[in-house]
Amino acid sequence: MTPEDLVLTPMGIRFQNRVFPCSIGRGGVSDEKREGDGATPAGGHRIVGCLYRADRIARPCEWALPIGPRDLWSDDPADAAYNLMVRAPYAHSHERLCRADPLYDLILLTDWNWPDATPGQGSAIFLHQWRRPGFPTEGCIAFDRADLHWITRRIAPGTKLSIPA
Image (cartoon, rainbow, N blue to C red):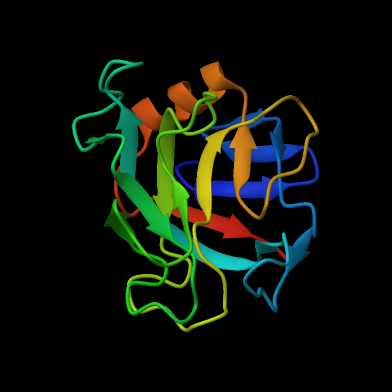
């Protein structure tokens, strides 16, 4: 591992010789991730994209893509587009990316179970803003808004994310 990798530690995410407090899934870290278990998947992952609410924040980095009201994320294991971004209207179970709260104003996408998803192994493992310090996620990793923006300005697609079991 290098200082350019994101590494989950008991104190938070270590990146560029700093440690950022973060929240993980309510199910803890698991090496047997399943859809709906609330766990953060253990292992080596990569950052593969960045999405942002252009109506709320400035473009956080050159490779960020704007999201709008019709953008969704499929979380239905029976859906052919499981664990992919889709557009409304959409008949399968999904999560809205444009939320009323600010949690998804900036999203870093990971390659967990992506792009060729295995049904039921979990979807939408994002790095995003937290509700408040220590409040667990549904499996994602969440940060203070300022810390998430600081990290986003300094990473690139392919940045490694290491989550020890």
